Image 1 (cartoon, helix red, strand yellow):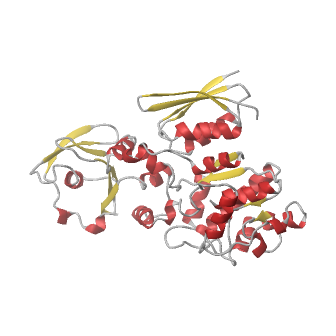
Image 2: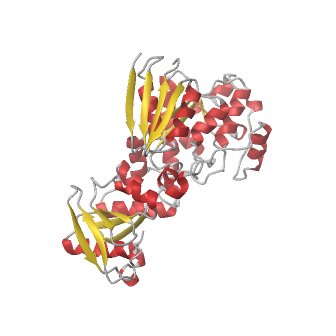
Length: 333
Length: 76
């Protein structure tokens, strides 16, 4: 929402604006809708593209997955309530935007930040940190809060009229909504922060578990995608099960069957599951019993499953489904 | 004029758009690019990206679980 108003405020002053949207891999939007069958019929919309189209500006979507890892793994300014490194994230993105700005011969950067709107990255004391540590210094203008902040280069040079900028502050969105309506906006994109999986407590638990089990804070794109999908059960440090909760997730997880061993219930309706880890035969049977517990054969004496290794070698397993007390709550992430 | 195909299967939004964007940046006006996708979100995102950036979607079709989106590169 903020960025739509921010851009419009600049356009009202005749400034040419182009958008940059960074893709970290942790963006919520789109993925769960694309994966889960029940969500597939909902209208799809990438908010950044939608907002750019509403505003009539070009949008450049930049893949920063690899470089962003260091921000998530080693945030200099620490994490927020979950594994959200908001201040480091903002510094990193402004630095990348600054590099893009120089490479494409633009003059300054604008963001939709408002003083006091976010607990980490949009405080009066941390906003100058973003400017300084990103290297952008006074070429960063926050049009919605500019009159609460020191003058920037575009204001001093007269490229932008400071008097026509705003003095919003605090968490209330009412004045911003009023401004949006004055521009004729009736819809707006999700606010920043609400669209990052790292601010989600349950997702952060799963990511912390991944790091703990591997003994190091590393991840690949597939890891962070899989954390968004299914029911995750860790019976031991060296193995975890990912069980599809519905058909769409099952289909998505099947895309990983050449990377992970899998379990599929064949005698009853039941979830498709990936096995992350190297298991003994006894542990494979334990995994099968857990998967059987989540199948329609949970009350049967025996459930049949197909176990396949990542090479595609399959064999049949017959197990008694695990009893509820055999799957302690702390195993379920 | 050239015609190319890029494989965006198993990529979720916005990666198909990023792949298309990066490929188009290397192409010439009038060239055609077909993206083969599995994420149905690409059916709205790639055309939206084309409208914003002045490219033309000339065909969209689906076959089983695959979505084929073909665009013609505009002025850049």
